[in-house]
Figure 1 (cartoon, one colour):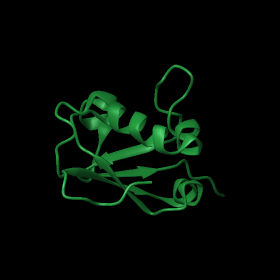
Figure 2: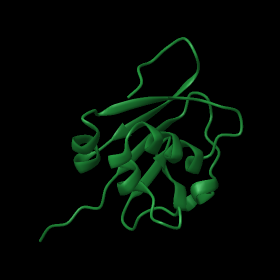
Figure 3: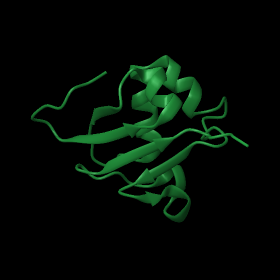
Figure 4: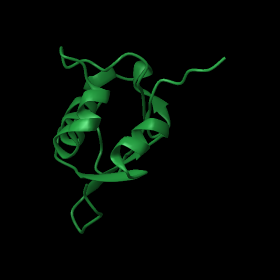
Length: 100
């Protein structure tokens, strides 16, 4: 994956099985102007095919159960996958959780 550098990056924190799949708890993705959550997920998928399969479905929509928070706010209450990402934003990805 990528490490922090002098360029502006977005910090993506991975939880549970996403962390295990990537082998990292945090990834730093280079920020680009007009970046959206969808763009960020594409960038993550380009770095890790395992994550790509877990994050987006065949229609390039968020897989069922994946939760995305931008600066602590769920994207369902923002603009969904079209939520803009700022240069210093923090994104948390949470996989579906089961139990009983």
